[in-house]
Image 1 (cartoon, rainbow, N blue to C red):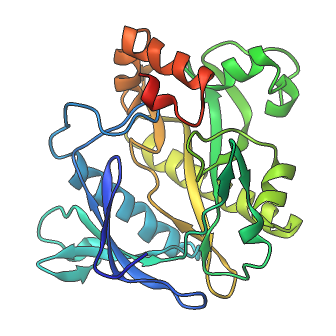
Image 2: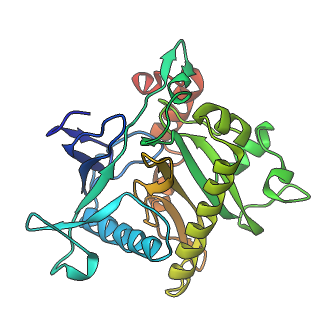
Amino acid sequence: MMTGRSQVGSVKDLEVIKSPSDNDTGIGRFHFSDRYSVFDWGEMPDHIQNKGAAISVLSAYFFERLEDMGIKTHYLGLVENGKRKRLSGLSAPSRIMEITLLRVLKPVEKDGIYDYGCYRDAAGNFLIPLEIIYRNSLPVGSSVFKRLEKGELTPGDLGLAEMPSPGERLREPAIDVSTKLEITDRYISWDEAGEMANLSEVEIEGIREITSKVNKLITDEFDRIGLVNEDGKIELGFSPERSLMVVDVLGTLDECRFTFEGIPVSKEIARIYYRGSNWHEEVERAKRTDRMRWKKLV
């Protein structure tokens, strides 16, 4: 990660101001765009006006709330006229967020198998290579139903006694985990996640506890305006002292699935639009054929 370089992502770009080292964090800036992505494809052909600023401001709000709750994050502020400010200090929405940068240790891939050995000796100051998913309900289109059908998941894993129906509300939120840095990310067990990222049982419990607190915060805030927080995801990292910290972005319509009286109002709208199209069928077929190089087949 070189200083002064920018990394272009599907929906936001990362400007590296100061690169992290083995023992010290760096500084970066997210530049949120109006791009969107579905089904892991990357940038779609059309854009959503003002999406970048909306995502930036919403995520900043939740980061500042987490800090008030005593939860460590990588958020430093939003940038206006070249200066870093708190959300309350802005004169207009900003699409630039300044953050603490952690190291990204990339697992080595060979013949479709990933070696996570780089995490065995990593003491701290790195992105945990996992996405943590919370589920409050099982809406239509949830990946849970495919996994149940394939036997990759059981009703018991969700705290249920029998097979659920689309739209079913869970009595207690379920917390799921997937890989983060693979070409096509996959759901894994918590045992595998711990082994992969060299996490102790106490650290896994800490991850689950933070996820539950984030879920409750987002759920309560959106409930105030009549939106239901169906599910969502967060990412975490370790500080140089190996303290857990929330990273990336959270609580936005990219990271969460919200509904209003049963009607999707988040990125699920775009998924519904494309789901079942010839393009989507080609994408799913390609992923089944070759999960490492599927894009070349579409």
